[in-house]
Image 1 (cartoon, helix red, strand yellow):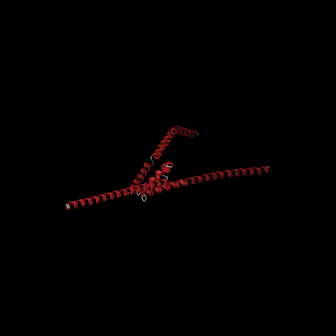
Image 2 (image 1 turned 120 degrees about the vertical axis):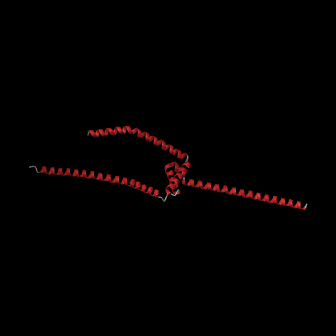
Image 3 (image 1 turned 90 degrees about the horizontal axis):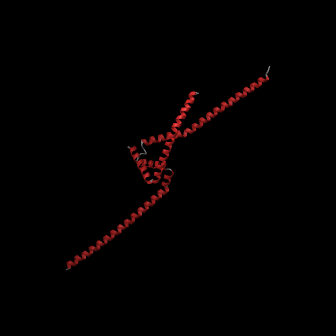
Length: 145
Length: 64
């Protein structure tokens, strides 16, 4: 009898222990769930803050091709293509095109100035020669024999 | 003078022939541009992710 009561007490103790461990487990799981929810909401907040700050949708609406090109560039850098010969070549090409585009209007202006200067000089020399001829004519008129 | 006139005439004919084709091409390109921009505006996430992936792949290829 004594051994039976002992074993029952042991069973009771075991069930109590099991109940405690399950409740502790449940509490831990609930805490983990809360933590995960917190982390998720914080991540969402950060993501929305970043998107609001960068105004990606607005940028995409205003200049879709430029935004996509910028994102392609970011991907290119992330892919490790920054310090490569291809980048050097692209930069060189961009510089060439940029310099040409910058210089072309200047050259155009210079050429226009040159041409207008030449035309002006010709016109003034023409008028000068005409006036000289006129003066000569006048002086010749005075010397009528 | 005759040669100049002939050249002018051929140029004018060429322009008359080519102009409608150029106009058509312009219209088509405009329509394609509109479609593409509309698609980008309708699916910004997809397009941005695609662009990022494309850039990444090109970067990986360039690194090799």
